Amino acid sequence: MPHYRIDIAIAEDSQDMLLAQLYDQDFDFDGLEQTTDAVQIYVALDAEPFQAYLTSLQSLFASHQLGELLSHAEIENKNWNEEWERSLKAVDVPPFFIKPDVWQGVVPDNRTVIRINPKMAFGTGYHETTRLVMRMIAEYTEPKDFVIDAGTGTGILAIAALKHGASKALGFDVDTWCDTNARENAELNEVSDRFEVRIGSTEQLADQKPAQLFLANINKNALIELLPIFSEFVENNGRLILSGLLDSDRDDIMNVDILKNSYNFLQIKQEGEWISLAFQKH
Image (tube, rainbow, N blue to C red; front, side, top):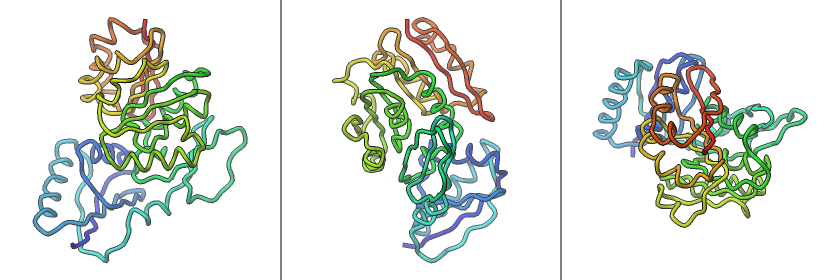
């Protein structure tokens, strides 16, 4: 199967939004690289599906005013995700320090180290929403909390909560790659005995008790649809942390009936155009 590199011109401060859109709209890729003014995507596709992929990318750029397709070329077959992993840097999100397992360097003092073996850009700490939720976790995790992490991905958020005092966590995600990756990261952080990972959607919650801390770093449309179900699994006085949201999404989320009627708003955190919202159920 041919392998291609797609070069996209995009400013550094817009790259995380592009990656979030690629993820949300199910664009598969084998690896990626980021520079200050471009993103390179690596894919393995036959000729006809590749042309369809390019067309879909162009539509994404046009609809979200994100990026410009510079060029594409057939390239040598490599494990581009492995190449990307080697380029990862650690991310400091006090009180946490996210350390890719391939990274060598000095960890700052007074940090809780979270080791990751990432398979995707999301859940590495590079995306603003990951960092925002981690800062919320540092404020709202209480000793012995049971945590539910919707859209767990690499498992980094549940792992952060566990290392900050929570007793148990359940993470679920519809993407099958998360099963292996989140479990690997749980083992790296020595929390695998307290972190259960399931593949699927809200049906995975059917046998669960309500959580004291519920995390959902997904996207606006999914949150609006799923919040009534999520709320069934938030304990009274429990905390609900939401992200995957742009500042322009704020009013739409704040006006969801279940949040207006059953929750007190605690706070908002913002980084760039991304936000995270915290609520407490009453």
